Image 1 (cartoon, one colour):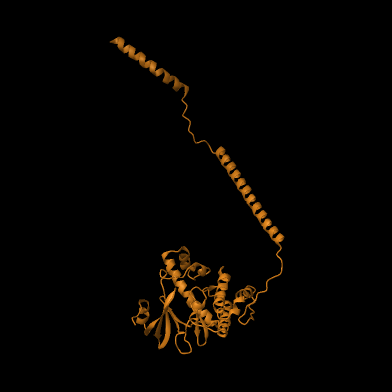
Image 2 (cartoon, rainbow, N blue to C red):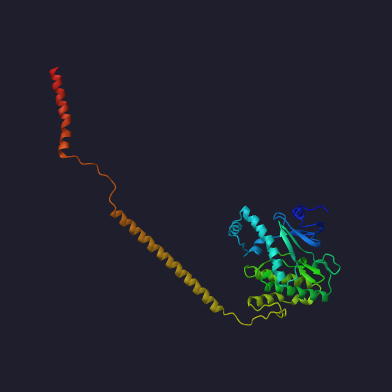
Length: 336
């Protein structure tokens, strides 16, 4: 087949031997089956930001940081360079997550290399060595659905123990491989401890799996594994082999509403007192500044210049000059 434009540099540099065929196209990327170093792999070509349909990216990117402070400042400002750096960080998030989860024992595709918006990774195959189907494309019986659900639940627990939440997990992001369910698509994965939306997105991941697989095993619909796992995580009691029941015991302890209201009122009073104190301090500062300005005006000599006073003799002389001129003028007329 014709080599796609984004794969041409990898072909030219010998990183890809052959592009076999397209595999699928999703909201984030297009996938191709390729040959690299004699092995069949998947090339994931990330789509440009204007071509993607993934929404609310900022929710997943919350808490992500890059080591380069210049890049981080540009990303925070949203400049042109910052947008490019943001794209690169979005792609690198999947690469980092795959390495991190592989080390934690989570069943994910093995990453091989990442270059210029293209990720080469392991091709997940079924028992017939064909590309593994998605969970969404398979009909299951009740026993298969239960087995897949509990397998995925353990994978999700391993992910959370490694500090990560998938954030967009559903039947469309699970491949049914010969070795068991494999979770894919991690560009939106985030650190559970740094994202304020972590609990909500984690519960949504588990609920998505529960809702889909309960179509084939209805008894799963009444379980609460998501809430149970997250409660254990918050109490630092979650481990990869922690026994799970799917039930959450509701607390029978009654809330002390009066104590809560007292606490709220006390905080409000303290805030009002602080505000009053700030107002009084500002008034004192303004009064002190006004006094200082007044004292400065009194101490400063007047800059207005008074006109020089003439000596009395000079005044008398000035008054006599017009009379003498008139007398001289009369004498000159008589002589004529």
